[in-house]
Image 1 (tube, rainbow, N blue to C red):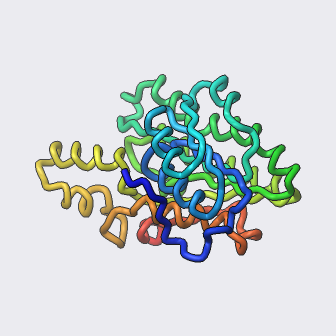
Image 2: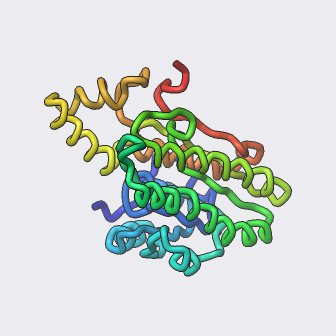
Image 3: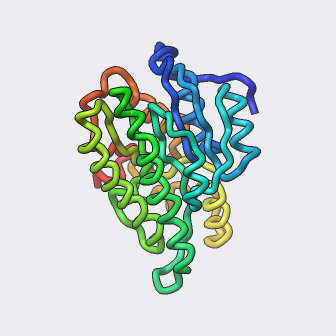
Length: 260
C-alpha cells in the first residue's frame, strides 16, 4: 500500500478544509477511495470498517482516525463520532440466491448494515450538521437501487430502501444547509466483485474477461469495470462548492445500463 495520498481532483485540496468526514466500509474498495479523496480535499476522515486492520491502514494513509465497528450492532454505531460534516454511507455486503433459498438471517443482516445503520448514523450526525448550517450526506447506492436483478433480493431491497432514506434526508435537511444524494455505480472493481468474477469464470468455464463483458456488464454500454476512484470523484463533487442545489437525487454512473 502506498504511503502517499494521491487524488485526481486537481484544484480541490482545500475544498473541505476544516471539515470532518465519516466513511463506512472505509477499509477497502469504494470506501477507501472516498476516504483518500475526502482527505485529499482537506477533510479529517473517520474511517469505519468491520476489519480493524484495514481501517487502521487507511486511517494511517489519510491522517485520519480508525474505528473498528460492526454496523449490524446498534451499540457499536452509538460509539462512533457524532461530529461529522460529511457522512458517506458505503458499507455493504452481498448474497446471491433465489428468494425461496435466501437465508432469512442473511437478508436481515443486509438490511441492518445497509439500511438501519445509515439511518442510525444520520440520527447521530444530522444534529451536528444542522448546528453548523452545512452538511453533505453521500449514500453509495448502486444501479440496483434503480433496477432489479434476479437472485439479489437482499441487496436490491436494501439499495432501494437507501434511495428512499436519502430522499427523506434531503427534504428534512434542506432548511439546514444539508444535502443528501445517492451515487449509483454499476460494477466496480472491488475485492467483492473480483471474487464474483472468479466464481463466475469457474462456474461458466470461461475466462474472467468474458465474465466481465458477457455476464456482469451484459446490460452496460461501456464494457469495463468502474474504478473505485471514479466513484469517489463523484462523491467528492457532491461535497464541493457548486452542488448546494443538488439534493434528493441519484447519480447513475452505470455505463449506460439504465439508459437501455
